[in-house]
Image (tube, rainbow, N blue to C red; front, top):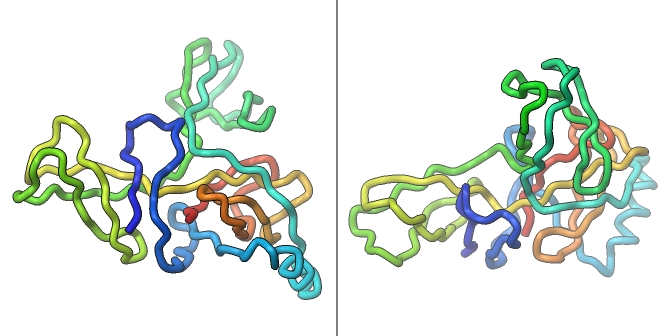
Length: 202
């Protein structure tokens, strides 16, 4: 059973969840599931990948977070600007709601969320149980202000992985997951070097 963090709750705290069974990858829709790698055998796994012609790199990671900045006065919608990211400068394409000279907050995190229904039998202080994105049993605390019969959103525990400058789509990245376990995942085809993608960790 694992415990997911609620959307809108403090985002500077590590996700808390218990180990669950191995999850399957769910393609390019939302964050994908990373493959857990036995840390002592990680170096051997890298050699095997290289023998198959698949390049591998060590990647930097960060927890999901908000990045706030002021949009430059001369910036235009649809153009890329350089902002301060978790590991230094990063490029960001300005969306339509970004206004020149005004503050803007970028959410660096998974876009996928889960709607959780609150049972009519729920009592204040109790956790609710529901099925996760891969059929696993999940528990979450009900945020204040919600009542039986209502619903709220949760985000899966994940980590943001930065694509190294030398990496390209299909390369294997190795990194430390949210719980400290060694993990590996391929670079998605739509994420260029220097950008981040979300991985559901364990």
